[in-house]
Length: 317
Image (cartoon, rainbow, N blue to C red; front, side):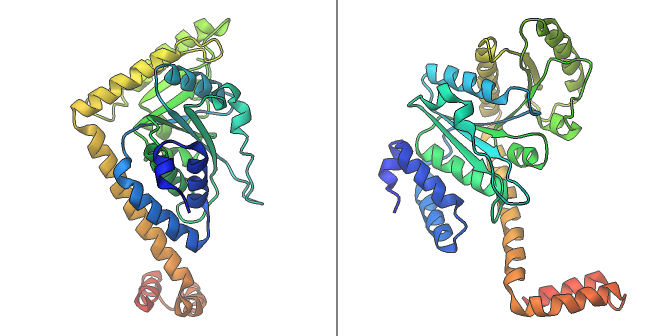
């Protein structure tokens, strides 16, 4: 059993055990983890959740380490949840984040947890959302959710954080750098990393380009997406990123957006879970499994419409 008092006191070993329970695919463990989360719910919601993404090679780990150390110096407790891509073939993942953030992992007020993106119900979103709740119950002030590469997980992470930050390279010639326009539209800020040495001038040019591009991408009434430069390696401009996020947080609170956004995220998450649970129930229903191949063949043979076949399946439930 998980000692909830120890978890609320911030015991890292207990927190790690609780996350392992949440990540388990066993039905008995899932039931236990949901009971635990329900008991901890009153102690959650008191952090700021920040999603961080960017193409491979942009320096996410270096930035997160420098940023995390800056936050700890400000008296914050920081949790880093790194969504690790699982192999679609064997399902394994590397989970090497602690070796990439060596200094941060030594800090008492830091907790780093790689989270395999492969999973049962809910995948990335379920495990990461529930892990965030556990970290909040353990009194972590800032939760950083790192995603790898630029793909579907970015959209999922953007839908569960308060502030979404996209890291870029100082390369004005390669304007979009493989970043999808949709992800640009999700960004509350772009931060051009590696703005040092010979790249400093290039970073300023890139900053100017993105500022112009983001003029058209305002997605809340109170916040214009910002473009900052920094050098995580030299620890320059990292504090400015936190100042910017703090300003966003204050404005979101003043405009009553912060709580309403979280409520909306929870509502969307509820709808998604209902859909996934219904799908799971369909797969487990023997009558459905028996009739589904026949109905699929009937649709292929144009004997019935897909709508009629779907209605038959739903009626079996």
